[in-house]
Image (tube, rainbow, N blue to C red; front, top):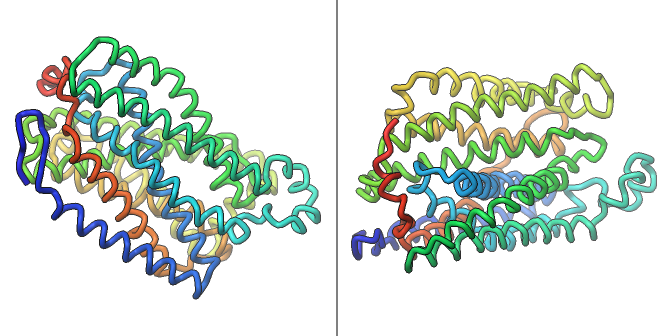
Length: 393
């Protein structure tokens, strides 16, 4: 791997791309074979893996919008990484096809006879039906793609020559984009996840998914940035000061995730409405109780205590370890949301859970790396780039 010029263009990255592509293809093929063994498990494992990886895109979209709207200087060095993560949307749109094909296995409301025999589902039928579900999915993916593409194209145009209007344009895209993002991620989480149990509902559920998505992209920035640093790439650009800021964001949103998760649980527990409490009851039966407790301590308490000292947030090795820990907890969180709808009385780990994560993840990372290394690794003509590189805490 070598730099082509001072503008942070990198060549010789095939040795990074090829292994993840092979892992992705092997994972997808192996998972697809699982369909013929247990098709219900296949679809639920695939859905949990898909949601896990698309949360990185959701987090990147929000972070990019926030960056442009606030005019932040410190995050400029991460902008190209965020933009490239967002631009994996076309791949994820294609990978959503198996979920559409598996709707009858995933969503109880997709069976007409079940809807006809259930008064509650009958009332929701105008919204929860296969045709409208598909249309909404296309709308969500189109919104995310158009917003991501608009920011990405403008950013690349800036690489060829800076003009003040480009900065203004990205801010103008981000303002309505933030509103569209908030609405679309909320309804997508309702459709793809909450409707797995169509009797259950929570108005705070979209915020819960959002909080996990932002943690996902923050951990991605820490882990990927540290890997680049190990290769000597962007070492003088993304400094300890930037990782310190990421650590502070991680600490803040660990608290936010815990607050939203507890708020959802507390309100449902206090109201004690059977249609709502049954969702938590499924996650407190058998071995699901262990997973629930792991999330309480592993996703909130442990990272909260570890990230509290300033020294940890400025120690890249420690920060990378806690980032890996958080991303594992995030996957367990998504698994906890999806799989109890298949296995009500206890956890049944399947090999397809692992192969689906590797399959979708391998293709996701390969697609990301291809795009990332095809352009400058940072917005080279942003006039505030030098300010961002010299940030101090």
